[in-house]
Length: 185
Image 1 (tube, rainbow, N blue to C red):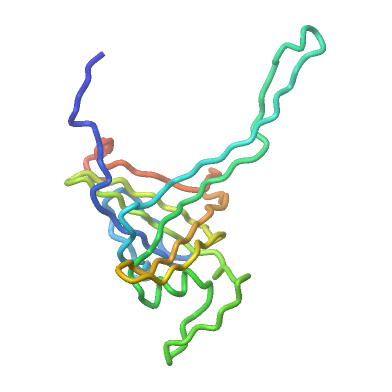
Image 2 (tube, helix red, strand yellow; image 1 turned 45 degrees about the vertical axis):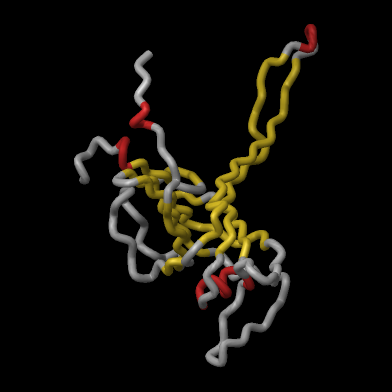
């Protein structure tokens, strides 16, 4: 087995974007994002967490209670992070509604903002990992704490919904620039 420490990646920095589900999809880790994708700004030092959940059902035979099959009954993918830059796009993502021209926002705890497209860029020097969630929704928000010496945070969890595009069904696409063998095509 050949070990190569140059293949160890660190999420040094990155960005989280939101836009309409009609936004042009990325085509690679380095493709230009459309202007309709808004940068959500700084995230807390904890970065972004990807969570994949899966529930299964074991099927056992009558004979010896042998396990003969296990099928997936539920699955989901979620991205959670705390936005720490107070700006229109961040506040709208957190509260699920539009900021008015006077800077106010009407809070209805049940609003999610609806389905949107999300892109996450994870950067380690020249290496880029890009994640595209074609149809996601803010399904959870964290507490907001106002404390001296701490940034005001907007913790959101985006759940990726299943889509079918060109005959394939998925909730997210992930590109690794270091694994791209197409020479940038």
